[in-house]
Image 1 (cartoon, rainbow, N blue to C red):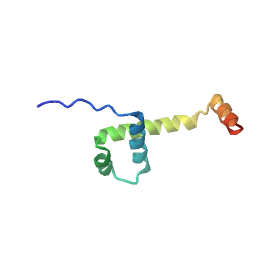
Image 2 (image 1 turned 120 degrees about the vertical axis):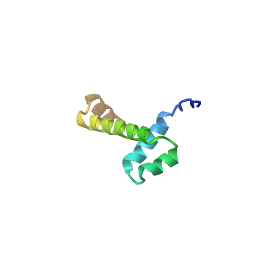
Image 3 (image 1 turned 30 degrees about the vertical axis):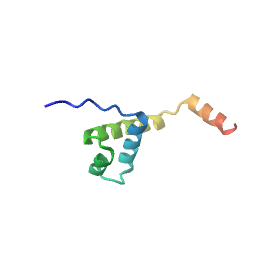
Length: 74
């Protein structure tokens, strides 16, 4: 039995898959067929994004607030 080489997915692809999984409009098996990625991989990316969302909103950075307010007046 020969092993297939690992696919290297782009960050854009990973984020698209993760966001689709978070939306919940399709069940996991539909996402597997659509993106041709294993179920466990989709769950991992979804969980990673969820953790990052929680971290992003739990401790706002002063630099982020400064950059946000500065970009409003450009």
